[in-house]
Length: 177
Image (cartoon, rainbow, N blue to C red; front, side, top):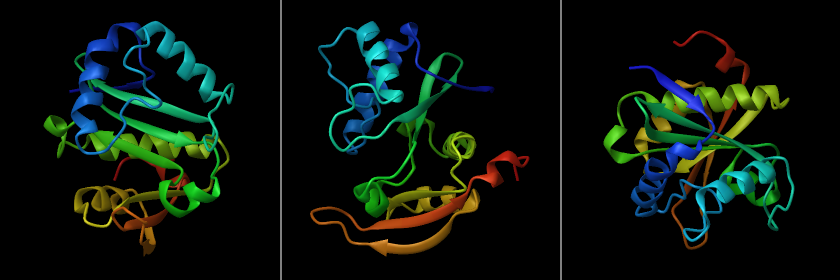
């Protein structure tokens, strides 16, 4: 199956909202800054403006999202934050990704992270910070497969400890290993 990495489109509404609902049960916001009452076209326009920094809420930075679609099904997302705030440096990192539960263990997370690393490289980021929950062995394996080097594990007040990896973005430009 061919994975298409792209921005969300108007015809993705049902799939994207379903993915958001599925991943919300795991505490992952598949649709950034989502308002379920906002019309889909308005949401897509607003997120596009935010990508360039227009009207960002406090604490947010511009970001680029790519969504993985397989045969018209939205299966995952990668977000690349264009710079780090102090909070992102501690926990969130440059890149975050998520794959719908029914589509895990098929290589989509690795493909999404590699694509995100390519975007980060294009933004001039040489080493991207990528984090995951300490107990998320699947995500840790994906990050390590993409060249991530563990810096440390940090406690998070009121949350799960986070593994913090630095990943060279140039690796993303090499053929898949």
